[in-house]
Length: 259
Image (cartoon, rainbow, N blue to C red; front, top):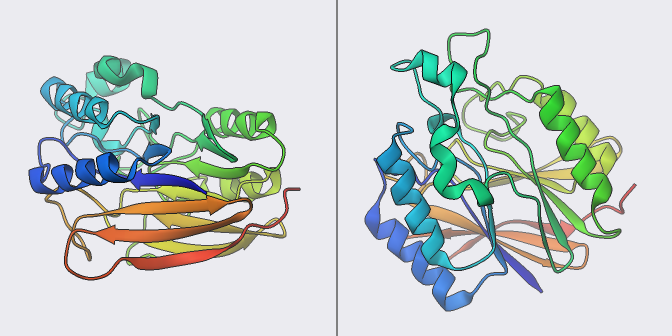
């Protein structure tokens, strides 16, 4: 069995130290095969926040890949830096950034959903560019035959089953093409609560899986992360929450055959 920990929205600058310690203790005790971090490492994309997040991620000592979140690029207080040099503070974690990851029958495929500039007021929303989608499709095509394909993005691609609208531009069209290429699930963050929603696209079932937050910015859930267990084409999502309640199985089943 392959075990992944899917964590998101740790928001250094508004982090919850108790939740971070709890997650690190789970990693140390259970030794997952990899950690998938789906963005918003920081609160305001400040250098000290990136340094703190890089130190914490490095302390976990397991293979991982890290996505960019909307909080990880400068906001309205520094619009020139957002446009000209939005990612330069990522130096401390550059080797982990948007890194395809292969572990024991599972391929994790990065999909960037953050843009330097969008033609709408709310820059926190997601967008899938043609370039980002093309990179993801190329990575899927290069994956070992039979691998479970998990796409990692910050923003949910659809609003299906969510308690608010994320309005990811290009998300629906991207999901159709990812499904046709063989994606079995899309892992995301951004909304700060866990979910696992199956949708039908391109004649296949694709699961939209969201993780909670380890920050103080809670919504609808205590601090949480997802444990994903995979064995062959079968996989399940378990919401791990930092409270006395038992862990919740959000979804499980056998992935459709690869196209």
